[in-house]
Image 1 (cartoon, helix red, strand yellow):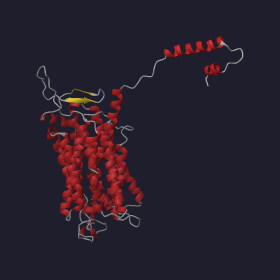
Image 2 (cartoon, one colour; image 1 turned 45 degrees about the vertical axis):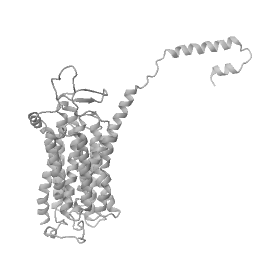
Image 3 (cartoon, rainbow, N blue to C red; image 1 turned 180 degrees about the vertical axis):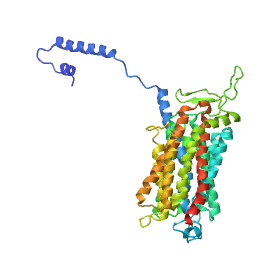
Image 4 (spheres, one colour; image 1 turned 90 degrees about the horizontal axis):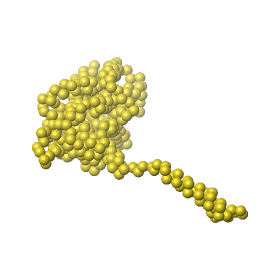
Length: 453
């Protein structure tokens, strides 16, 4: 109880009105002093709304990118199983071919074939989309991404013949390319902070898809059933885009009621900091402007191309040839967990852009090609002293790949003019797909040549 409370309720001897008045006077003076103290400012309603919208956007971009990349990744994780003789319905025996008679345990066909079926449609979409896809609404692009992803999962898991299975992989490539381009293009209309969570979503798709597939196989599922149960994943795109994301104008023309606008192509752009729409610079660039600016983007494109060529040549041309004998994992299981370790490295590095940023993009292709030489030497000379050493090298490979990817797009988002940013973000994705496609083309003959040794 306070002093005033004691004085008021307990009248000690000698304490009368004078003493009580003194306490009242002191209390009044204290209240007067408190009146001059600054009040804690209330958080404005618009600021609270802005914070909530920002959190929603962060969650939406992570979910959108993770789910749109999921099928692309899971097909690569299943590549060794899809090409195995036991995957075809009615064929319960493993098929041999001439390449398996050497000193390596080889599939009849390199996993580079699945890689090509996956990445060539992806590359076609990402190469062509920056030149025409801005005329199509984002709603249609997102719906097409979801549809092609669901079709890919159903076809690959249910088709009775391998040719149709490969077509399902093609659908996964279309979904992955269209989803990535759509998400990257949307980034240019939102706060720069969404770049880090978008990149984390790409890494998250890799680690979740690879672990889910490998884990389901380990607990006893067949490869087909392990793919079929994941058909619900693309629905996450629907939730992220239509339910969570705070939609902003992306192609709405400004109409002037007083006089005609001198620039009819000017767009209404959402300012995430002001919480309102402001006039934006022209976004519909001409073909000549895009072609000229593409040359400037080569400083981002070439390093990223080299990194992803090296990475996927390792993953789908060399890793399937590594088989550490006499351990608890079969050859097929080793390949699946190699993919898991790679995706874990990618996820960690793509999620670390807020902690570490590298502006020297050329360091990443140098490191990646050093890993390529090391893995190729190990395969050729059959140098596999420990499965854990191989795990560590592949994990580092994933770190380099993810760091190159996220730093490239982060630098574009930070440094490029808003007028060109949407085109720059979309066009740079093509370098990744081109590097992967060429890696797949070279991986097939290299695989066959090594298997004949």
